[in-house]
Image (tube, rainbow, N blue to C red):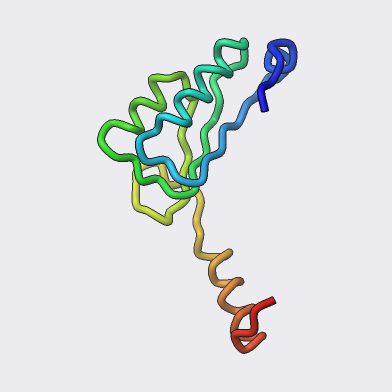
Length: 101
């Protein structure tokens, strides 16, 4: 979905969320599009921070205010713990004795 320039400019705080960031190209392009539309530098959230090569630096260079990732893959950007959600999921599975919902 493409957003209109007016809508992008109305956004004062932007978040950019990606499930897996390996090369960082998708996130960098999204940041560039947001910045071209006039938003503030977005905060980028990554679930699995693979970050091959210079991907993390390239995301920052594209205009990200900050990159935050979960601790599913160790990286200096880790700021969100996956321990509690995973523990709840395992506990739910055990309580259901492995039955699939």
